[in-house]
Image 1 (cartoon, rainbow, N blue to C red):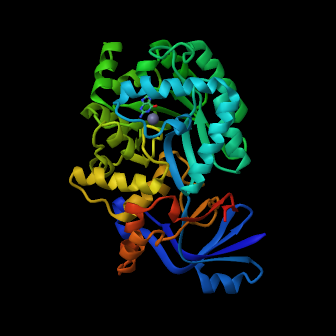
Image 2 (image 1 turned 90 degrees about the horizontal axis):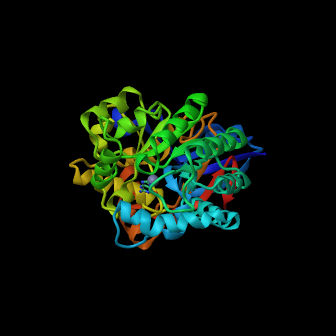
Image 3 (image 1 turned 135 degrees about the vertical axis):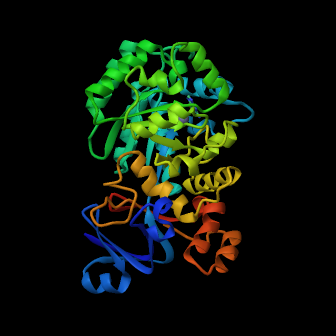
Length: 428
Ligand code: GUN
Ligand code: ZN
């Protein structure tokens, strides 16, 4: 079956942080041709209709056809505790997160939450998420099984913790290595699934556990590795006390083989100059989680400066530390955080961060994150007038970006008109 989707199309031919808004290519009467799960052509609607008269046509009118959103850092097990009041990072983990993650010892609960998580992400137009699981191997199975059922490209890994976590939520250096290896061999590269080696963060791992996972990463450099870095000042002070010989927080990872190009470092707010240089030198990915950073009170990520310095940066919700499942809301928060840092990000830059930028951060930009020939057909179609407030603002727009920006700032799941996953409609 060949499908032809009609609407406004938005694609990127370059990075708008380096090339400006002209990096985006917009067709106001555009079309995307899909066959065999991939994008076969993109161009003006009239041209593609004439060239492919047999294709099944779905006309989305004035809606915007974009690459599906990509969430580069989430915790699907925290779905049910999103928007928990009143704590900062360490207290928040102990009060809300760890008790909830304990419940994932029950595979049925893990499966129920994984299913709910993917329903929520698809409702918000997110077609790929890179998630932390819990320490329980069954939580990885639950996430991958639910993603596989929906034909989604998805990433996760068993979260490893062997200290500073409650009874029932700790593994060991050896079991973390063994379980991670077994899960990696079971899932990595199956269908559209990727295993990610996942030490939670230095405070909840002994040096022995970090070393074991560093060794596993060296044995499987084809996998990404994800962890947290320099999110809150209290956390950084705690890391210093736990690793007295480390030069800085990043060094706790570097000393144990956990710094490299496929490394995804969540938050990365309060960085030392050496850390900034080393992260750039190895071309590691920094994952910006703005709703989380304001919600838990972590600080203001310096996106404009780090991006200008050439860092690889992705955007993410960090649910449930983040306060939303929506990448639109996340773009809005990135805009607000950057404003507080003195830079107004352009809508093209925000959109790029939530699609191609996040794909680049996950080293998946050859497969997803853009509308281009050969890419996997994961698409989100957005109504740019989804509420009365957005409609009245976008009605005044004289440019594409003026039409899109109200949806970025005020949009939510009501803006999701349709989602296509792997070339098939996931939500009509
Ligand atoms: N640092 C270690 N674990 C977590 C987590 O679950 N959420 C956030 N926001 N930060 C963390
Ligand atoms: Zn996180």
